[in-house]
Length: 250
Image 1 (cartoon, rainbow, N blue to C red):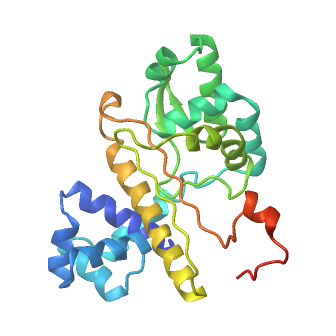
Image 2: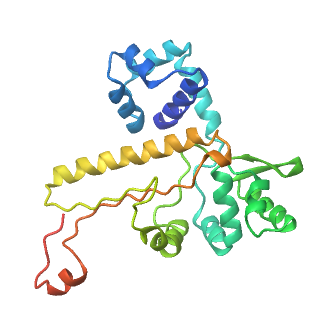
Image 3: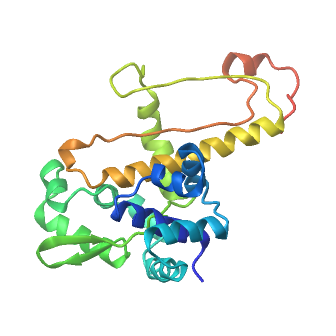
């Protein structure tokens, strides 16, 4: 049986296909639109509500399960070795990244210093890794699932931390489409856990919205990064050098 998260992902696609909104679902369930968004973000549906939405869409839960099972054939994550292979070849990683973000192959080689021959070789590697399915005429079909994620603390994430993150943070964040805030407070474990849950919901919403935006042409989208970080931290730098004892951690 398909996992509940996969069922919710399929349900969201069906809503989009039928041009139904979260507001429509809220009316069916007798909830606020914000509550419905939270249910989808957390993927926490009781069977009764899932059945109500299916009836609203003219579907059976078994239809969702079948489609979710079909989706399991897509790649949800790579092996550690595959991520290492991507990191070892900057151009391979670049092509994979932009294809995943719905650039066309032609847009990539027109924008970056990649020859036609190199590009074809890179596509063949990504096909072997089951990130894409290479079609005639260098057309590409993505073979990753909506739940695709890089390995936590794996080669790709380490690459971004070491090579990309410092450039990202080195900004005043005062331009159009930019925002930055740093807060510090003494929190209880309960509050800390609640904020982490909300950050995870925000991350899910970011992924959902980015998936929706992939239908737009490249010239209508801008590359956007979101960094979310929270941890027990008593202060480093000058503060850290003045510390005479360890501060209690969670």
